Structure formats: structure tokens, C-alpha cells
Image 1 (tube, rainbow, N blue to C red):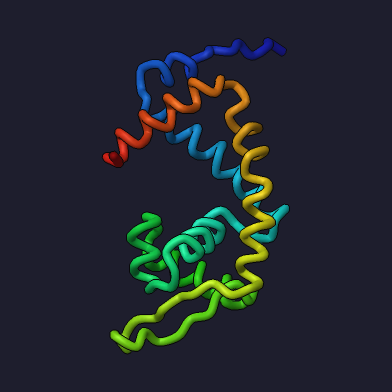
Image 2 (image 1 turned 90 degrees about the horizontal axis):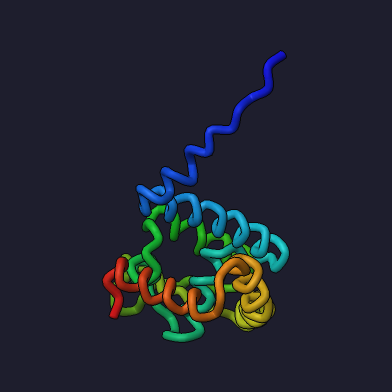
Length: 149
């Protein structure tokens, strides 16, 4: 039986198509973040919602969705999960009865602290191939692509 020859097409593709490279890197990081989230009992998107609530205070699911760039339908599930875990409370917004106001609970703050403590190691592991200067440069480039000042 003949042996398979490796074409090494992907490395060439990555050099031609930064969009493909970003998609593949995103997939790798997402998988790593999911594993990290399972270890902390707080998924990546859940972590972002808790972090935003601690930093900006109670806000609507719509605001969370827009600011974190998470699809609105996905945000409903995240808010449901966090509420079931006891990490957030949701109440009708007194200014707009059609909207829910989401707020972090004491248990949510504790879960966030635990999750945040593992972020530096997670980032070091995920970006181990980059120097600190390269990581900083990558962050600036991605912010530019995302049109963030």
C-alpha cells in the first residue's frame, strides 16, 4: 500500500489568506477557552458577561449583547445559564418593562474571581509561541481590524 504524501498546502494557504489564519486561530482559542471554562464552571461568554457586569453594573441583555458582540439569541441562553447557576439575577427594567436588567450576584462575583485567576496562565499557554512584544503587537493589530481605538 502506498504511503500518503503530505502536501503542506495549509501553510501556504495561511500565508496567502490572513482571514483563514484568523478563523483557524479563533477555533483553536475557542476550544482552549471552552476547556478552561469547563475547569472553572464558567464558559468563555459567561465569563465575559460576568466581567462586564462587575465593571459597568446592571444592564439589559440587549446592552450586554451589543457591547460584547454576542448574538441576541445566544445572549438569552447565556443569561438563562447564569441565572440557573445563581450568578446573575434578572428583573424587569423599571424604565422599560419589555427589557430585563441583568445584575451579578455574590456567587457570580466569586465565580468570576475564580475564573479570572486562571486567565494569565491560559493566555500564556494559548500564546506560548509569541513573545510578549508579539502578543502586544497582535492585540494592537486585532483592535485595529475591529476598529477599536
